[in-house]
Image (cartoon, rainbow, N blue to C red):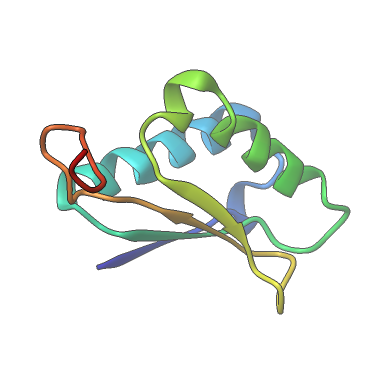
Length: 94
């Protein structure tokens, strides 16, 4: 499952951006979505930087697996989630 968040409509409303980002992260966890596409748009790059700063916060970073910048469209980010290890342990036996 993939979720999408387009930030074009709220690009200049800081608190709404944070709420929207937290909302899509929470929704992804609730629905066990493996991918969230976030579209900050191209513009000056300031909104994309704000999104990356939000995702880099310690309490947020622990909720997802990794962030991927789209190589073809620099106005888009992908946040990947993993739900495959209920005990929190992954890897091969020792």
